Amino acid sequence: MFAALLAGCAPALHGAAPVPLNAAWAIEPPAVYAEWWNRTEQCSGRTGDFTRVEFYAVADWHGQIYLGSQRAEAWWVRRGNRIYLPESALLREQLVRHEMLHALTHDAHHPADLFVRRCRVLSEATWADSSAEQPGRLATE
Ligand SMILES: [Zn+2]
Image: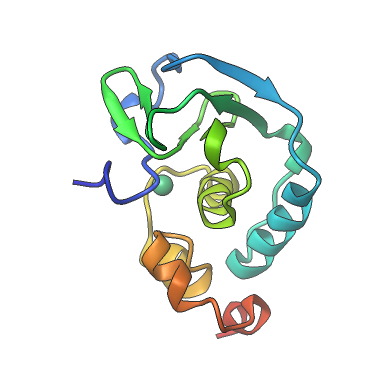
């Protein structure tokens, strides 16, 4: 089960109207997001237009948010290239960059090459493994 451990992104819901969840509201991305986007472009080798991504904050319940009946830590929704983040974790780099990587690949799957080996954003565990390493070095492996 992915929902409890990963920053979930519901493949089954893609194509359906994004139905928020709890209360959600559009936000201006914090300044650091541009830097995180650049780093995610670098580690993944993908490029995308940061200004075309829509960010939403969601009122969360202990870090969990809901999309319909599904629960996850955060969501990327293909339509509108939207990223939903818990209000309490807007500055959690691993979580934000996990969703950014979906926005860059336009894919809800989690290929290990990108999410684990190159960008390390799959989960808190893969992120912790990379804490002493330089993202730039990882990107060239
Ligand atoms: Zn994901």
